[in-house]
Length: 278
Image (cartoon, rainbow, N blue to C red; front, side, top):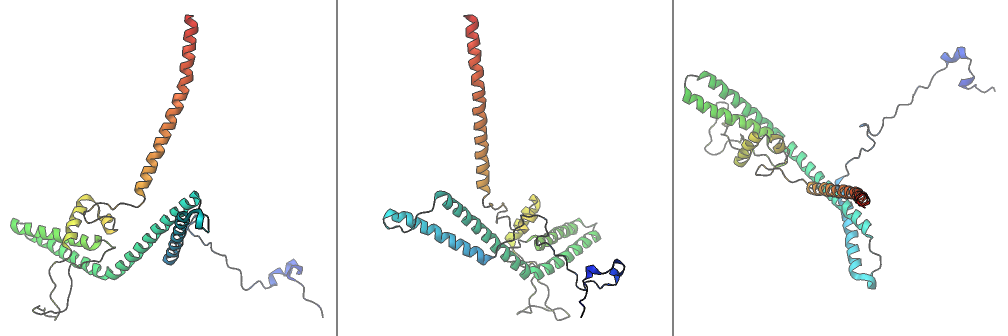
């Protein structure tokens, strides 16, 4: 029985009649779509905790070996360079773990209070529009207009309260809607009457300060403390001191070079002066 000829043996005039592969190979997508080769995924929390625990044990064991000395030490202590690199690795892992925990807490807070913040913003916006509309209707009455202007300012602050309240802390509702309590009235539809403005008094005062200083985004992202000042960033002070030390070293080197360049010139001047007067 004759064997079937391979595809490359088919005459060129018959190539179109030869069936092609029904399952063409798919083009593989690159793992890193950002385009940079140095892309690094964040390590999971459990892996960071394990790494921190192992490095701490290694450093504690090294301290114990050094304290025991040559008498009872089974292992040699770590070299200074290795210990410094391990300490830096430990500090980096601890910083990364703190950032991961803070990001996880922030995401939980956003998901938990998203609905409450949305309703507070809607209610505050409606009240603000109502107050501004009432101000246009009482243009002749200056006293009433001032009262409505103050109410409009408070409503505008309520809108900013709902938008820029820190995302990493529990949200305190502005207009909490509760079920009917003892002595609480109801409207015609049987729903509880909307309560007056509440919220966090200290946060409202801090919000006014941030509006004046232009720090609303920093307040929302949790970069400010309770007094409205920026929180210290870990490692920022060390970087500043390092840069200052580098600048001082560079200045000292440049000063030494200038002094060395000036010395031969001064020596040559002295020699020429002496030869001339002799």
